[in-house]
Image (cartoon, rainbow, N blue to C red):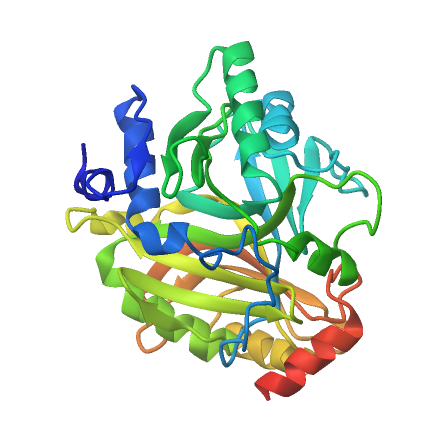
Length: 362
């Protein structure tokens, strides 16, 4: 086994179910597990059985929320089954408008947008999500895996009891996107419902929220990405073990992170310029910060849409692909970002919550 898996297998109360997987799949699992057990235990100890009282104070200079993640998939129907059956997401929705070949799955305040692509590529990292019932997810994954005769469960981890899984590492069978699944703390679904992200009554989805988006990067990119997000987007942009992180906060019910995880030292530097499949939509906490971010990105000549500041008065979103070293302009990451104002018509966060986050970050 690779070192991260060996370390976890030696944990005195950890039991891994190790499956026979390809080298590509095992590489994805190794990447997922480099954060170690601490990330797997993100819900507080005992939170499954005791009432939970929230995340606590937000990290200073947090952005507002990850609006959506767009993923390429080779088979829209197969990927849709993974989201509805394995993750227990709510029924898919069409994005509307003139968009064809896309479906959307809500995950709390965020949304996964799946787009059909002939040469779909897996996300270069993983997604960390919370579900209401991880035992139900485990059962559903086993059924789907049997029906498809394809690998869905890459790993499962039991930390406290041999008969109850604490962590699932899943592979979306169409394209190979990797998801790490934890059970949400007790009462978190009620908190989401009170905030308007779930129905107050009736059947609720098992997939509750997106907690973390991880992007794998070469080791040389961490310092530059930290500076990029701090300078251009006014984000927290802080170094973390093995990489760097951007924090998000919206009210008491939403805490998220965009994590850049350093790969092995032998990662080729040429990967810095490779286009990453998919895209991220990020909301900033105030319209003033949005305007500042747009002007800085426009001045750095990285904005791809809109191309000029002529319509700035009505501007609610802009896009860029190139994350650069602020001092030199050297390319660090080639990933489409959609940056939006909290006043955007599709912002999932209520205006009063966004306003309070803007004041807190001021």
